Every structure is written in structure tokens, then in C-alpha cells.
Length: 300
Image 1 (cartoon, rainbow, N blue to C red):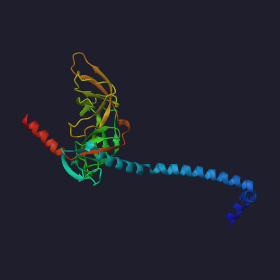
Image 2: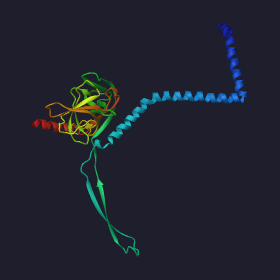
Image 3: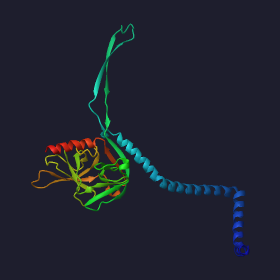
Image 4: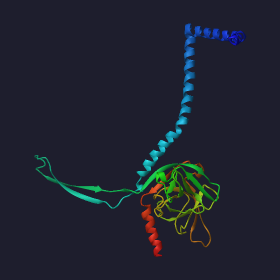
């Protein structure tokens, strides 16, 4: 109690000043209409500014949840794309209809025949997608890898493709229960079957380093008409990626003297230094595909 009295004796004048200042301010705003309007206008501006800043902070902390929802939506949309399905030959049923026009003095009961065609197509989904987050990544080594937070518990297995929002990212190598190691496209051992869009030429996409922005498309014969600006996409030969996925754009095309193939430099669509969220491609027919490949190898 004594300490409280000493505190009030020491700072009482200051607190009394604040109380009288606040009371004066209240009386001025309360009984002066002009001051009241100015105060309300200023307070609304300050409140609006503070609420805007609060919303910005709240939106920032809600971004992870919104990104997860967006990634899940992208997964569903990818599974609906045509390249995720196999469409066998369809049957066309032709039905002949006989229709009698309304009797009148003009039609005189003319009989009109029409033909309708019904096209039935059964499509089977081959590719499904599992969203994942990249928890480690390298781009400055000769053999670069990624680690993602999905594993056998989510159906991930070796040899599954991994794609990012803009293009391919790598191929799964080893898997644990909750994590997977991915061989990046920036790896000396990786080779992706690729084709030149709308031109049909296909080859092997490899990374010879050191620039993480570019890869090289090999085994394209020099008679092929390839030019800078052509689009490079995945082919259907590997079974790892769906056909038609964007890989990159041709940066330059050169030839070595005496060589029968182009030197094609491809600018990657994916920025591997900023890969954070990816999708693992599950080929439901991959095991059957590997069995057929093994049988062909055994025959050789």
C-alpha cells in the first residue's frame, strides 16, 4: 500500500494530466459538430487501414491451406485430361427413324426419314496423380535429387514420374513409408523420352550440365526440320509420363561436322530452383508395361 501511494505521489500529476486531456478531447468531440465529423472521418480511415493490414496478415498465414486446396484441385483436373485416359475404338450405332409429318393440305402426309448416329466411347483412366511437397532439392551438383513428403503409405513406388506446375521434375528412385527420393531431371543418369510437338520426331532428353535451365535433346536426325521456338513434350514411349506433357522450348539447333544428328538445346519450362509443390504420376498399367519390356529383353 505504501508503494502504491509513493507511486501515485511521484506520477500522479502525469496521470491527472492524461485524464484531463482525455476528458477535454471527449468534450470537444462530443459537443462540437465539426470536430465530431473530423474525428469520425479520421477514426474510420485509421480503422480501415488497420483492418486492411490485419486482413493482409491473415491472408498470408492462410496461404498454406489455400495452396493445398489449389493443389488438390489441380490434381483432379489433371486426372480429367485426355492424356490420362486410354480410349479404345468406339462403336457407332446408326438408328433410322420414320416420322410422318402432320397431315395438312400442303404436306399431304409426306413421310420423312431421318438418321441419327449415336457414338459410344468407353475410356479407361491410366494415370492418377498424388500431390506432394518438396522438402529438399539441389540444382548445383552433377547428380541432383529431390525429396518429397509422400511414400508407400500414399501409393508411391519407384519409377513413377514427378511433374511440377510447369513441366516434368524427375523420376522416383527410392521410397520409404512417408518419403521418397526423386532423381531430378538435372541428373547425369536420367533420360526422358521426348518428342517435338506437331512434328513427330522423338529422342532422348538428357542433362549434360552445368546450367539448370537447359537440357539437351539427342538422337534427332539432322534431316528433321527443327527450329528455335519449337515445343518439346513427353512421348508415350517411357510409360512414366503421360504423352504431351510440356518439357520446354527449343533454344537453339546446331550440327557438328560429320554428325548425323542435331544438337538441340532445350530451355526447361520448369524452374528447378523454385520447385516446391509437385505431383507424382501413378501409371496404373506400369507393371504390365514393364512385364512386356522384360519379355522383349529376354528374347534378345
